[in-house]
Length: 592
Image (cartoon, rainbow, N blue to C red):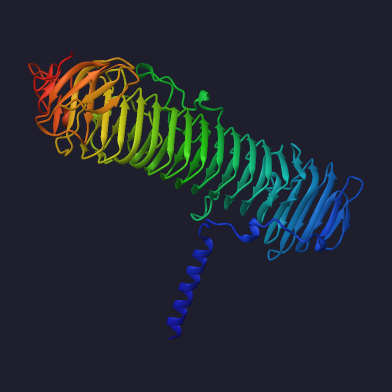
């Protein structure tokens, strides 16, 4: 019995410890509550001529104020070269109410929380407050204090006032435990990071103007898998950062807020610029250990976006996860010097809107699943790419490679949503297979013959949805014969801006699409298509082709169901893959 009780006790203890260490995706009532009892508070007036204290729990020595007991302290006044220190026990909570303070410390942190259970820094309504430090610290060896506001305990910032923090030495705000912010207006300037919470950063509200020489917002605990996370549910963020905009060592989760992020000088300063010789372009160089990361949103294990409005101008990836990435909501506008969105694991989009106006590769991941949302991509290389996921987009990579590679299981699955692509490389490139069962996909492929509108190494199976892709005919691939929805690969020339219309036999318009650039092949699959049906293809208002579908997959054949323009000697396009190619689908397709 004793052995059983000991086992149960140990199991319960381990469970409680695990629970205590788990990421906390919530805010306490105390975090959100910026009220205080002024009548019970100790009032402190800061001055270079002397610090006046009305109440208990605090003492001054010269220009250094030390708070040593639990309680509420209301601070006002100015210190031209001094600091406030909180040094309690690790069981005591302290509330510092900043009611119009300007504290500068030339050689140390202006506000230093040495020890406490938790400290609440409340910005009094209608007040403006400032904390700043000098460019050099008088630190003893082993002292890691490196921010104008530095805490060794959990710290929460709240209130309706304003706070300016200037980190001239290194960082602006650092907590070696949790950093929580629920309200307030913040202007942050730092040589290093703007906001850093080692164990976590959690923000539910407030306005933030951050100019950082390092990361804008960061959590960097790499020793505990349940820590090092960033959680944001609201607020407005204007962040300019030399490195990452918002970076989490583990998980980054955003549920709401307004974000304007510029990193690494923006997409005009592409961090991936290099000379790719024959293949051209200025993107896609792999990040090395010596390369500064300048991503918009960056997560070590998982990036989740379920809400919020974003404008991201990044010299590196705009969205990046070393693990999985999930987008289920929000409106995200991206201009990237590298990938618009990159995940080493699975990238899932089920809702929201993603508009990528500039990128090397639009969206890249080991595997990709799209079931909803609206995605609009412009890319210098591939629009959608599944390629094993590691962030080396063009390291040993080049346009047109996918059709000759072995299937590595990196699959693209589309079951819903609206996807529009304008790619200078492959429109869709899967080093595994492509599976489409729903949604709408519109692809403006490349104009060069080394790439295609779609490119896959395994199979491309379509069973539902609306799909049209235009591009060059030389590397064109069709869907695989195992498809259950009819598809046709058509050889036809068209110019940018000439609308493609697919009409039924009775003249009904089944699909209308206006390509953004010239093309010589069209791959189309519609739920309205049927084996034996006859259809008309109009380009620019003129009849370009008439066709009859004799099989589920018709058109130029080739590798895995389609590489038109690369036929064996003596074989014409249309002799592979079932039915038609240049000059006709079953003899019935021709320019009008």
